[in-house]
Structures are given as C-alpha cells and as structure tokens.
Image (cartoon, rainbow, N blue to C red; front, side, top):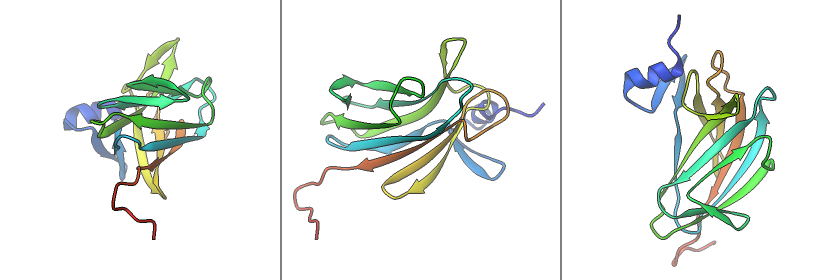
Length: 158
C-alpha cells in the first residue's frame, strides 16, 4: 500500500513535500497586515461531500460582512462562491489557509491524502486541494485567493 500524503508529511517533518513531481503543502501561509483585503473565489468543489477552505490569522481578526473571528471556515454548502475577508489587527502578519471536509458530520483536516497544490495567479494563488478521502485528487476543492495590501505612506500609484 502506498503511503498517504499525510504519511509523507509526517516522515518529512515538513508541511511541504513533493508528490509525483508536484509541490504539495499541508497549508499555505500568506503574508498580510492590518487592512489587507483577501478575496476568495470558489472555482470548483467536490459534490459528494461539503468541502471547506479554512482561514486562521496569527493576530487580530478576520472580518467577513461585519462578523469577526480569528479563524473561519468557508464551506461549499453554506458560503457564497465569492467572499471578501478584511484583515483587522495591528500585529497581523500571517494568514494560514488549508482545506477541510466533512466525514459523517465531523469537520476533518490533514488526514489521508489531504494537501494543497498552489499555482501563482495575478494578485494571488490558485489553490488546488485534495481532501483525505481516496487517492489524491487536487480538484476536490479549487479556489482562487487574491490578496490586496493597503497602500502605505509614500506609495504612489504612478
């Protein structure tokens, strides 16, 4: 039996590995600061079970439509296809992003063949997520994450 992606993460002692020529991450860490706006667009999701993109801020809160929390889950069966998240917190510096799914009603992450393949796109990344069920399938959840940092004094738009 082939080792799972989770087995490979554990053996490597890292949250970044290479599987069949692809760089796979357990989570993606994005640099942010107070006032950063993160736009998340769900492109595709597995219809067999709810899939989620989880977001956690190192310091401060994530603001989504006036609701504030340090961590949120954008579930395929309850959230809109596009969500805007505002970063609030003077000490905020990193936003961790990972995927999750439901098994028998249980919120599950980082098991089996779970992982993320990230591809650069303008102003962000496309995240191709495999849930932990069955063989790796990096189309279980596909999202685009666009990041816009606030301008700082001295910045010009020329």
